[in-house]
Amino acid sequence: MPAPNPELRQQVIAVYKELLNLGRDYPQGFSYFRPRLHRAFMGNAHLRDEEAIRSAIARAEYVKKEIEALYYLKRYRTLRKRYDGG
Image (cartoon, rainbow, N blue to C red; front, side, top):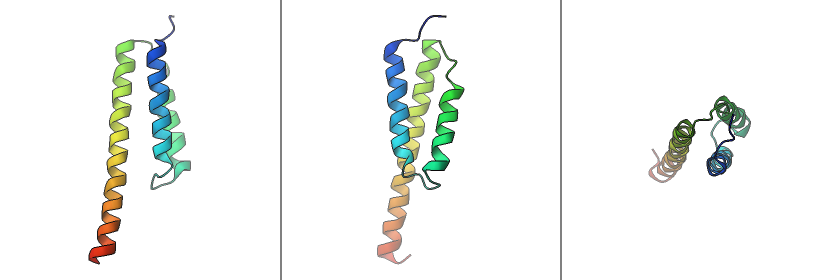
């Protein structure tokens, strides 16, 4: 079995680290987020096809954007509640 492309490996590690960093502010806590993130990445550890790895990276980037949107929405709602009284 050939070793995966080192460039893809670096991309996977970078996305994992970014998601771990985002997980520190997760509403249900880091102790909830980290094991699920680890399980999701380990579930794809068997991938060797470069195209499959790229699609998994794209899915991880999508999840990262969704988590960022969740944080912005939470911040917006907090500020709105604080200043509008609603």
